[in-house]
Image (cartoon, rainbow, N blue to C red):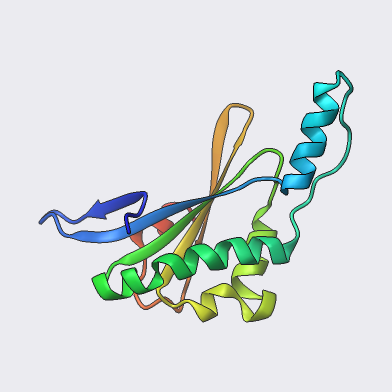
Amino acid sequence: MTPDWVTYDDRGIAKEIVDVVTLHPRYDIDQHIAKTVGSGAIWTGWITTAPDRLYAKLQDKFGAYSTYAKNKRVAFVVALFSEFMAPLDAVEVDHVLTELHGGLFRDYPQVSGLIHFEQSDGAYRFSGFANTSASIQSEMVGLFL
């Protein structure tokens, strides 16, 4: 198991792990858009991300590294990238983390927080969400609050 990023303290000891999850549009929607555009037509429509879909995607990632973070005694941060075609806003992310089905943060105290990022107009925008009941707090998430 290898997380995407690891931060170390000045002694070279791992203190935080970060793993990225990318939110794409649902496969059927992506295929429909590709088929429409591929035929020379212009696709129009509105794309949303269902809260339960985001919940399941994050739950998979949280579960994948929770035991690792607990055993290594490191902060665990998930970095959520939402593509242009799978838009999310901070309210939707917060709802899944703190409210939907009781909130993922409640069920995963090994997860220190989440950093949501997206690209817009050639720049990246970041939002941080700290798990206030995490067993180990993240310094990194605090940079994006």
